[in-house]
Amino acid sequence: MYAAKHGHGGPVFATGLDDHARARLTTLEELRAGLDRDELVLHYQPKVTVGPERRVVGVEALVRWQHPVRGLVYPDAFLPTAESADLMGRITGAVLDLACRQSRAWHDQGLDVPVAVNLSVSNLRDPAFPDQVAALLERYRLPASALELEVTESVLMTDADNALQRLGTLRDMGVRLAVDDYGTGYSSLGYLQVLPADDLKLDRAFVSRCGTDPRSAAIVHSTVQLAHSLGMRIVAEGVEDEEILDRLREYGCDYAQGYGIARPQNAETATAWLAAHAAVTAAPAHR
Ligand code: C2E
Ligand code: MG
Ligand code: MG
Ligand code: MG
Image (cartoon, rainbow, N blue to C red; front, top):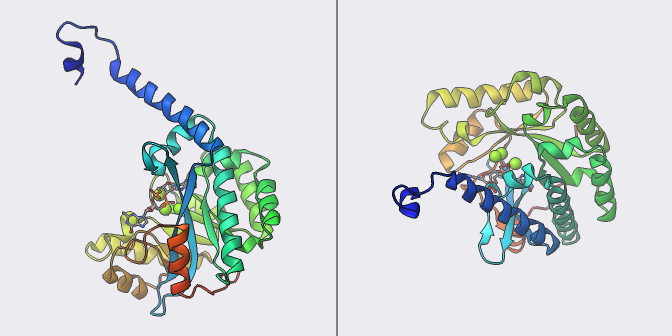
């Protein structure tokens, strides 16, 4: 591509990097404008019990950017840029607002389903974050148990003391906490020792293979036991078929999420799904 653009003997500048930097700048400018124009939308993916009755225990809010030209943009395509430009505070603020507003609407329709929101590392660097959450809950007249916050262990990689203190404040308010993508990245048992979480979400890398790969099966099985020993509920991510669900039941896994149960859906479709699956379930007892 480079050669075609400049021909032989053309300038040997870091053209690729320039393109990359330009694309990043464009994304950033558009994202800032998009935030001003409320272009972020949420899709919701249900979380159900693994038992035969398959009760709905919550939904996870997943952000998408409804771009005027590019269409629906997925988080992996803009969150890293947002993160590096200090925009995650605004994005999480917008996501929390949308999630709480939806939770209120569901509550008013008799669909009492807790909503989980993903946090980024930078959210917990902000000393005002717990107060922002409290203000939103109050604004939408929601009990703290209506909200769950998902964090990866990476929130403890820098400034762990402050992050832990803020997570502790949120949990004391009654907000549920989940460790997301457990088992990947920089996860270590040391984090589990100190993170005050209610739920452990086991990454789909292990879950999706536990029906065919004995090593993955052993990891899933023992992580269920580990979570339970720590007083946590365990959520299997990325459940794509019934066979996996049978396996998870056998291992004593509590909850499951995945395309095989329900895909993330826009608010309207999710509402119909929840109504059809009678999501009139209270949040599981908090602690
Ligand atoms: P995550 O929190 O681990 O969310 C699960 C991701 O896996 C979602 O991708 C979901 O659509 C996808 N998924 C669910 N079930 C299955 C399955 O059965 N098979 C497969 N292959 N994938 C499945 P999505 O929506 O593209 O989000 C990707 C990541 O972006 C999320 O991973 C989360 O880390 C981040 N993210 C999404 N929304 C937000 C947000 O509002 N704030 C922040 N900070 N991060 C977010
Ligand atoms: Mg998540
Ligand atoms: Mg995850
Ligand atoms: Mg993930």
